[in-house]
Image (cartoon, rainbow, N blue to C red; front, side, top):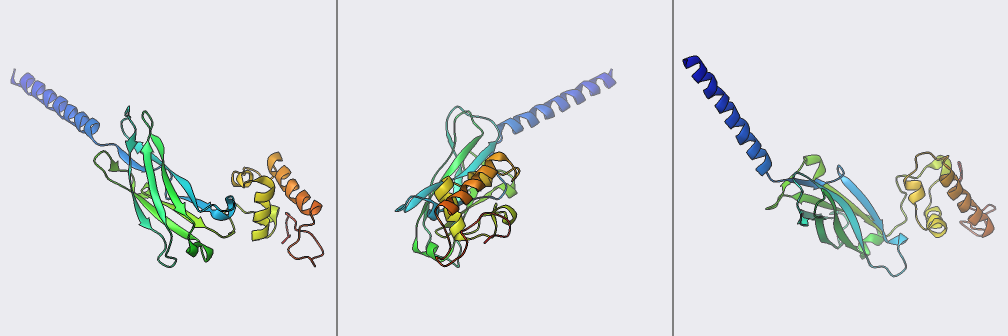
Length: 227
């Protein structure tokens, strides 16, 4: 008889422990972080309409935990820019997870400042704990916005298909294609849309006799070995 009493007591203890564990899990705060690990986005005033002095950049944010039927705000702390290039200005506009969603955007307003004429600046941000959210995984707590007013070589540039990089070439891409998306999202440089874009760039340079210098023999070309 005592054996059965001990068994029943043990089962009740285990059940109680499990119930307590579930309560702790479900009562825990959801965790917030950036959506991408060490997320970094770029914003260049050189690609904006003339006279633009400010712009808004998005950094993806996410939560792990229960959903809610109201919008929720994630706490983002600005860590400033590079100490070697002071003078940048920015504003954290908002960081909202919409009702019923697990993903949202942190909106960062950046301003065109004089220091950007000398060098790019990297503005850093960090997700921090709040009354509503704990922080998520450490590798996903930092994000950055690279702000520039210079024609700098983008990470997607491919010398074999576009030739040597130059600020003039990048400027032509924006003039002809309006954006760099076709090259940013390349799966294969031999895809039709990519090859058509390169053809348009070369056609534009040929039809308009676009050169680096008037005395140059050849027009600018987007191909392997070209400058």
